[in-house]
Length: 284
Image 1 (tube, rainbow, N blue to C red):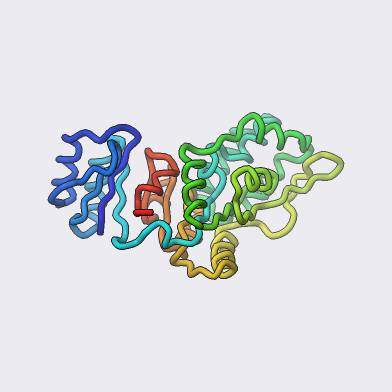
Image 2 (image 1 turned 90 degrees about the horizontal axis):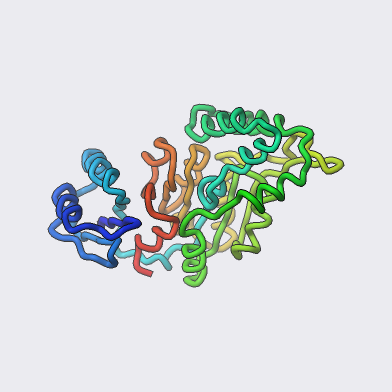
């Protein structure tokens, strides 16, 4: 299976020589200044995975071993988490900042994403309850003033959409943000949680079914069925432990700036390159 190396900066020849030895490959072929591939990497054992991690991390290089013979256009769906994946922030943490509770809320968020809090529903309810009484206009302020797309997001989306892939944004965050991102980015499907608002104020409650790990996985399967695709034709991108179940049903999973538990289980990890690193994994 091909080994792909990519970085934000040009790959140095000395680094390629080192990694060729680590991977047991005969040679790397440059596809761009910052992308190189080897078609004869040694079998990806746990020991080789550790060796590649150790050699690549200090050099700012991301590596991936992917199935040979596939094209990006062979996939049918790209499903993405929102907070800290498609966008750079955790929306709930930024909302909480407006009532002086960002540190408290973000500590719960981090523990949940690391997998230390196993009941996502309860962790979300705890965080949302702290927002009770906040003016709902804060949601627009977070979107307008703080929400930024992750590096490479627009390039990745425009390219896969041009290839005919469908897109799904499935989030344990909130519909206020997914509903704004859907038309902006021409996304096909979105799913997220609804904050209850009464008389212009957050009530501290979530309305309806909470989008947890199980619901995320179910949504990926349902969208695949809706578009006539097999889950093996889906690519799922995420960063937290509540993304693991939907990543497990996909044909390819990408851990983006992810927690260690997610990097360990994903097909591919992007620790340095942007979301458009996906475009370098397969011919189009």
